[in-house]
View: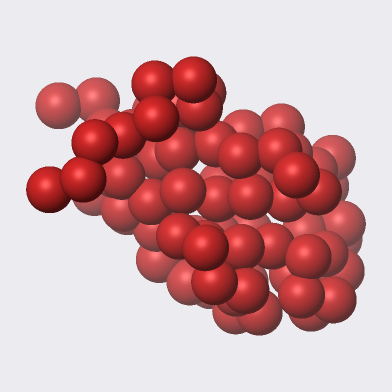
Length: 78
């Protein structure tokens, strides 16, 4: 398993997974659900280094989300 970059902030989720649109708001990468819809549809969001255009994409612990050059890793409570 590759080493994780410790300089990337982590945002903890309560459940096993979270939808991309919800995570963007939780991580304060965007301000609203409407903004999430726009940035995702415009191809401005990367998940694990690949452009993601599905707002409902399920994220799990370890996934890396990047918007406008700002990256955040999904972490779990357990």
